Length: 255
Length: 255
DNA sequence: AAGTGGTCTAGACCACGCC
DNA sequence: GCGTGGTCTAGACCACTTT
Image (cartoon, rainbow over all chains, first blue to last red; front, side, top):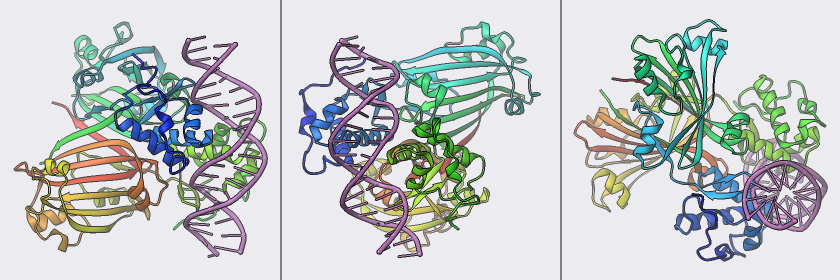
């Protein structure tokens, strides 16, 4: 479903102002941003190549790239490595206080979720992980690595750890759907408490590779620790999100 | 309290590898990151100048700057315009489900908060604002603009709108502290519901100017709509945060 | 094979912070 | 007034995607 060319009017970028602001990187930024926000360019539409934008603006390629980096930081555009620059779609709204899985809240927003299992194996707990689960370092843990999509765009990679004492044989189940459902249906585990942290970060190495983005792109790290009613840690999850794919929304009643 | 020079061992950056990874921007990044994380460089310590880092690494200045931008996106360093690059301090932890003001939660983390009133005036509601408050467009609103600091570093600017029917004469009170307290003590308004949204954004124009950062630096936009027990919108707040200053933490009990 | 972005060089000039 | 970062140019070569 990728829109390859956006040329309703072939060569729109030629209109970019040449003498005034368009020559500086913020001017170039503004010109492109205007075209996106005016709706000329649909979500996931492909921008002209950097060298084409150059001829349109008269700027050096470095200047054009500075403008593109700017727009990327703002979440307006994203890139596929060595393929091109594309218009970012609207972000997904996430409410951490609702105990709904990814699959439900993406679907509820009329977007198409997909989960892909990258790996599932047994590992030995590091001291840090052991502390979270109340285990001894070196104790076995289930580790799942998954990649999740919205409308065919990879938006996050996650690593999940599960205590095998609570969910023996977990790795034999279908892990490409909702983990919550698997835990509830097969192990009668219900989550009673969630501790969630969110922090801007950079996507590096494995994360960047898995999301097919350049290493160092800004992202959002969402960490979740789930406990059952007895206070046992069921699940420890680290989600690395594209920074332009997520919007957090919380509705709190006080008192 | 700004640390001007970090030269425990004058010229540490000369140690940066010259032939191996240090010549490429990710290598330069790694070298500087290592020095920060090892504790050689304290929070708010000043890095060597770009031209000094150049001689240390043998790279072109553009390459050094690419490395610095990288570290900035990761939240490890920040800059003061035309002054230099500095090591970022630890972020503030924010729990949107707790109805505590900025002053309280910063203090609780042994950091020093400060609020500065930038402007306080009456404005006419835009259609968007009117819709939020359930007013007609053009109705009067109190508008406050404030800047808030942690340990002398400006971390956010906010614009607050308050319905003057609920808080007549608000602008005559001391607005450099907790607004919540003013509303409670002088107008007997208690907040019963908060709707909060958080989204990565770019700090531009006014926001960038107020935080003394370069326009376009990534940030986090936190929007809050507060209602009282009768469902009347009391306060509409837009906070623009430095992206490296905040960490969100939520603790949820389910069912 | 052609085209794209990814990276890098080696200069240059400017605006502003700091002393 | 000196040094800083901020911006820009005009090339170059490489690695990868796409056709």
